[in-house]
Length: 334
Image (cartoon, rainbow, N blue to C red; front, side):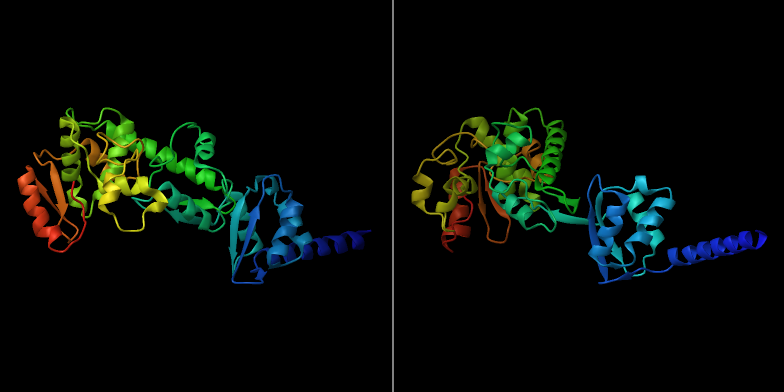
């Protein structure tokens, strides 16, 4: 009996030593990295098998036993993981318990439309397309803003996400970020600003974003539009007209376009257009509510990204002759 006990003890020690050795050895992988999305509700046994199926060259039984006897199997978090060469079984479990997910990113650019935003999300690696085929109105309803136009309500920024996340989840984050930025900008508005609501500030900011060729000009451009709103002059902003043309715009803005009435034609209609025309960034939001103090009512693109500002129509016409008509460049001539 004593010999049997010693034999069992020796075997146990050998197994323990072997397990300790195995836990510290790098796992063999079928590729430089192996990726796996652990779904919520997966059992430790299923997770072990899924890692092997994904490219980890190990016994699924051994992995499962390690997860089980570690005492941490119930702490494994759902998520998207990436295992690199050199990782040990200990590293694998530690990664899943900590929730060290592999994150991808999608970048949204100032001045993009919601249509461009959706196209970018559709191309994002590993992002589930839960809104594919849905109209914008349905997306806004799912985001808790039924009846609100989607345009302009999403903040341009870089958003990270785990594989398996949905495009709607990214949209929700961008929507919340825009509301936060808009609230912060509105709290800093000047007392004499022409826009009277945060929504109007968002619309004006989208126009400022599209009209700006040089960042430093944003407050002055906003100043021009604020001045026009105060005295009842049409904004006469080409980007809004172009937005209203939609698919009809072929890249060449013609006189007939400026004369054709649409809800977004700021030549034929006074005041702001009915919705934003793009996603404004933080600087454009601030410019909309903190315009430069100026008497300018006009501006025209110089052709180098900057704009020339004028207080009178005579001054503006001279600037147009200098910077636009001589080159036959339609430019921006509010």
